[in-house]
Length: 370
Image (cartoon, rainbow, N blue to C red; front, side):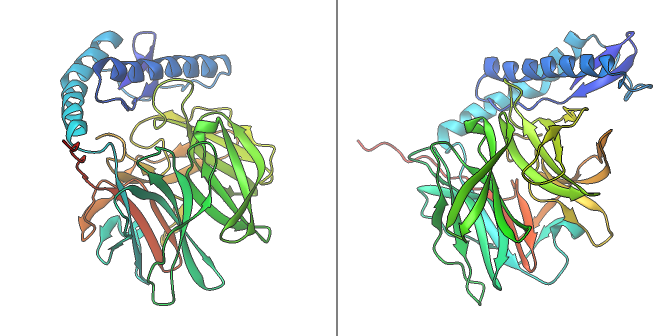
């Protein structure tokens, strides 16, 4: 954790950087220092706008910034970097699998547990499916997924239709671009079906309109410029909001939360004056659509990068959202106990009776033929 300290005693900013490049000490250090720069810039803007907290947001730990960073990094991050290097020598970088279940019972957002009843969407092993988003159309369920061929290293968006018995059909590609696509949030608004996939490699967030659901999609508008990841739409008090992460030029794509708002889907989309809202590998990156639980709380699934990318999923309650402030509760970790065989999850969604998740499978690299 990095602290911004005023007057040698008042902590006015915090950052919990995400270390993406765990196979290299030097690259991992770059991830951390990139977020130190982001924090300094954020605190400077808050100071200029008179938005610094009036009281310390936490107690300082009594060490100099360099001492806090060095002790934390050498004591915790470096051993993980070594383990990650060994793991990557034996296993693929990632092979995700999608889980699904049909249920009338309270879901994961209500119970905080994965529980039982999960089935695994089959794959052939040469590519994976991840980031599932369910959508019902004419009483038929569909699941849209990131479809990632290992051979190309560039994902497309595919759809999986389900029959009346809840049996999945063969996935088929519905959207492909020159850049990587993922996180296909599909929703209906104003009588039109839309898709908002992640396309951070393109440097912009593009909204697509269904021209012939579920297979036809047309780029409608660019909503936000930048390396925006996992943008998640939410309507609140007459405004539309996007929660996402922004790479900020360097460092991880998973630790810096930004929020945008607009009066209509086509925009104009404006960045929140408090951006970045937070720098925290435990809760910055969304992991699914907003959920209204049975107690009336608004929850956002968030990726927990404490153990690395895809290490887990939490639920944050939305405490405040307006043009002055955005506040989320600390994440409540989802208990992975149950019959889902891949507990390292990073996406949770539900539409009606259909609930979906994903998780990393340990798939060994194939040995080269002699």
